[in-house]
Image 1 (tube, rainbow, N blue to C red):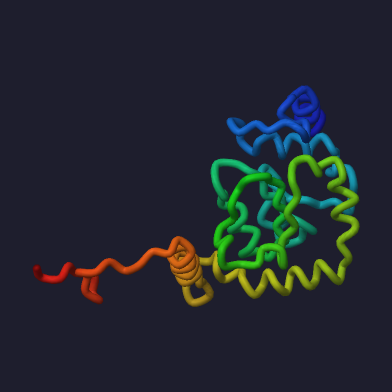
Image 2 (cartoon, one colour):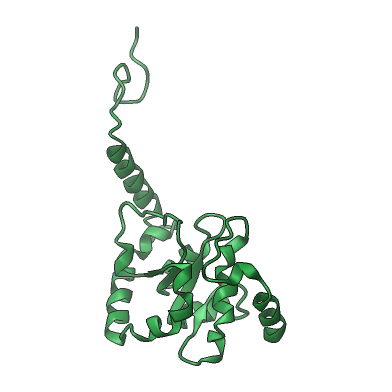
Length: 185
């Protein structure tokens, strides 16, 4: 299976770090990571889509790969809920709650052009730094869980929306009562 996939991605131009493929799912990032053959290195356990033991692998991985795709994707929600440090390999995607969460404290964000140095970049993150990142992740993970009593996704969503309204400088329209019903007029 690995050799078949490696043959396929080696021939794909979209896997080249300098190529942006806006129309292709993952924009060629998964293919470029696969070309690095990190799966052959025991200390490079990076979890992504298609891993057969996904539910066991995610909580035990060093990092969980999040690529550009069709939006944020459900995987980043899984990663946060299962406490796997998100490895964001994308160039243009806004992350969920980007305006209210300090993503830099609990995730690693690299561009596609940095994939050739991915292994050395990950190896340069000390165990102490990873522990600190995991502690920060635990502070915010409830924002990705909807079910009560643990979940705070509703509250995080309202906070992000409120922050966005403020950033846009939007004002409450006159003629609307506190309850949201138009004033008689």
